Amino acid sequence: MSFGENLQRMRKKNQLSQEGLAEMLGVSRQAVSKWELGDGYPEVDKLLLL
Image 1 (cartoon, rainbow, N blue to C red):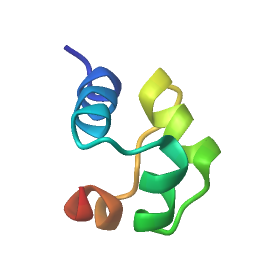
Image 2: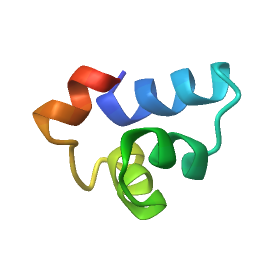
Image 3: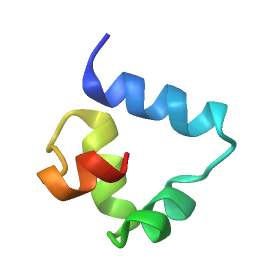
């Protein structure tokens, strides 16, 4: 299972929208979408928050 798949699964398990997670991390909804699609990865400081 990829990072993006894990992120999406955990986000949904915690009943968070992409927008909700983005607000918690201080990033855009588009950034979260890219992470889930495997088009990018969060910076280390965001990974620590996750």
